[in-house]
Length: 215
Image 1 (cartoon, rainbow, N blue to C red):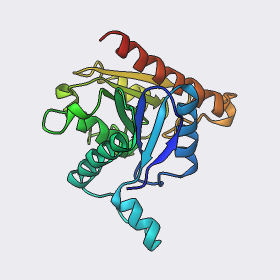
Image 2: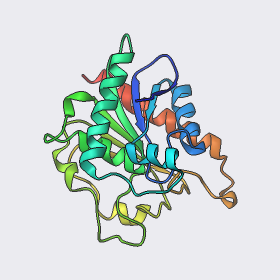
Image 3: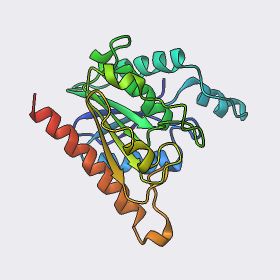
């Protein structure tokens, strides 16, 4: 398993991609660099379905949850094997990868592998299908879950998400002003996309720091 690295100090964060773009896509690169600059050691990996897209050039749907979760566990173990001093390990990612990271924190999976999860654009439901809500497992989380969510994300806009809050379990949602699913604001907002991502990464680091200090 290939592991991409950003940053060499701070808490270890294993990061997964979403369903639509690979681990080295521009959005993932920007996110990883922002997180590394905020004080994380970021380690990225790729799911089998994306590796197959890369090798065949043919688009295919994501693997089913058992394979995604198995790959997640293998990735964390591989990162721990490669790192001389892991310290606390956090997991997370964009969209699909982040959702699977949160599932990994449930008792049926391997919550002992990580201190908690950080998700950047949680897919609360498929676009235009708000009845297919994906938060049932929140109630059984064994570790904290922090979510950075764009206010106009079609996978969970602010109004519809807040209508269901507070969520059961240790879940915290931080809103990214005018953000889409990649946490990017519109031009008319006047917000600097790079600054928005930097601020989001800094908030993630502050969350982790607070959790570590409270232990």
